[in-house]
Length: 204
Image 1 (cartoon, helix red, strand yellow):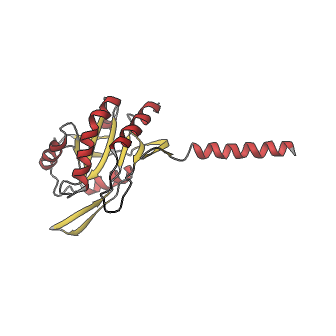
Image 2 (image 1 turned 45 degrees about the vertical axis):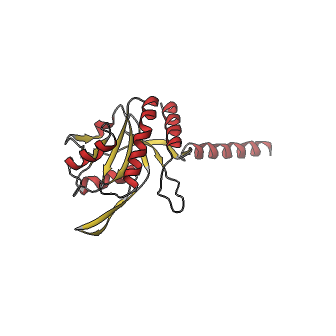
Image 3 (image 1 turned 60 degrees about the vertical axis):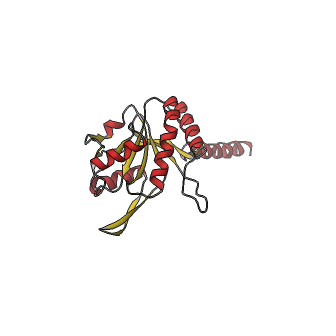
């Protein structure tokens, strides 16, 4: 009976260990994946017309956000918040880059993305591509987006979360908003900074 009890405890302990090491770890505003996943090959273009590929992520902490320049509320609010948080993020990791992904390649030309992102922070990247390349890349990050309206007058519904990619070009964490009734979905900067610090310090 004792041997059976020990065996059951060992099995239960193994299950608990496996669960702990396969499920995301939840922090203040983020979920950190126990097994980071390398992104599939992709090619986009930044606001200067330069290619933005998997190689552009190597050696950098990349914080992604998806939206579009004609967004009336969530995007400008989010980019303002990221611009405010950026100096603190840089103190934690000098190799951090913020990447705004435009889900509206038809209207968000290279020149428009350049003007738009410069308003918030000239160090940020503003990337996009045709939907045939953009959609699988966005889906690989875990973002969703959809056009709402007709071809001449439409808005883009999109995710409001951030995704963090490690210096090995692996998707490592997602930062989630905490919606409140009557308010825009937002990620609190203090939570973002605290979680980013914990993730960077524990990364290996």
